[in-house]
Length: 469
Image 1 (cartoon, rainbow, N blue to C red):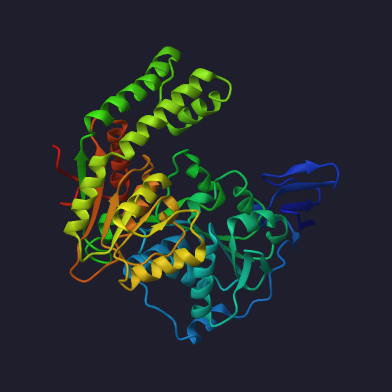
Image 2 (image 1 turned 180 degrees about the vertical axis):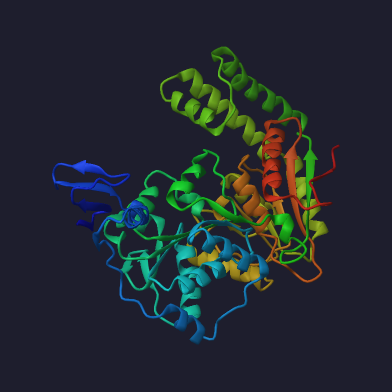
């Protein structure tokens, strides 16, 4: 007879039968396996006709979640694609990732999955803002108290919301308490450390939710092992004009001033000459990170990086960009506008020059919430921000986005587009990219453009050049 038990994120398998993915542990005189192998090991034992005693799961006491959801009076009808997504997930033995655009109702899909599984559920989120948003919506959906792990609190209940950071800290003790794991913004999970949340858990059911499946470092391939891989996807173009707002993208090219051009070429040539001298080729973010690491011991590499940064600052902060921003803001006096930049320096410059409230990672939560509330009620018509609003914060509706500067990250690009796609009656969303011509920004914008190929650019609404061409 085989006996299965759980200890600190691993399975102990006592008996004289070796099972797949298990290794012998001399200390415990038993086989051990990662807790995430629990369901596969059960299937192996059952299919092999091997008798076993199962003491792995010690689930939190849980009421009937289906009944609680039905009785709450907050049951919402699923849209066709949401229902399709849940069916695909169910057909994959309730494992896998659903890829849905920002604003398409991923939280509702997660709530319905929790009700359908009817087992203690742990919802993982990357930020405290998302933790509070999920907690509030779950409380409304199930009319019950929701547990919280994060922000200095630790209260485990049948449905609990946790940050990835807190779940990582407590992964060894959480691993057998929940039957379902819901990973919001699941692209965070493959990061070193976070993946142990999934590895140390015996939960047989796993749901990943994201608008952007792929990671720049390629680690999204780990999701197959950790969650179950991609089982359903809807592209932006498939929902735009229906469940999401129709949109268009305009690329706006501006020229540097003569003085800016001279400074840009002087600085960027230092960077390029170093690459040529050392034979370094920049093909990926990993190549750039290697150069950053090298700069710690090579003065030449450090000088090259500083020169590159100086050149980029000139491109990002060009006077021509601010002139074009003024023009676009004038065209959209009646619209709500998000202005996105890569660095806080430009955020504050735009805020001062145009008297627009700014949000950065330094903005206290109370002030940020006040700004967003005034943006929502129309007191403010524009907000300028760095990357802090890309994900993890519930933002009010806007119909215009302006990218002043940014990385080549496809994920950030799709998320920024998603910020303006919530459907507004009779309103078309517009995303502007203001790009300094003949600088490294043109390549950055081209790499971002690949995001629309993955997200599904809307027919007839691909990026259109405007000005300077």
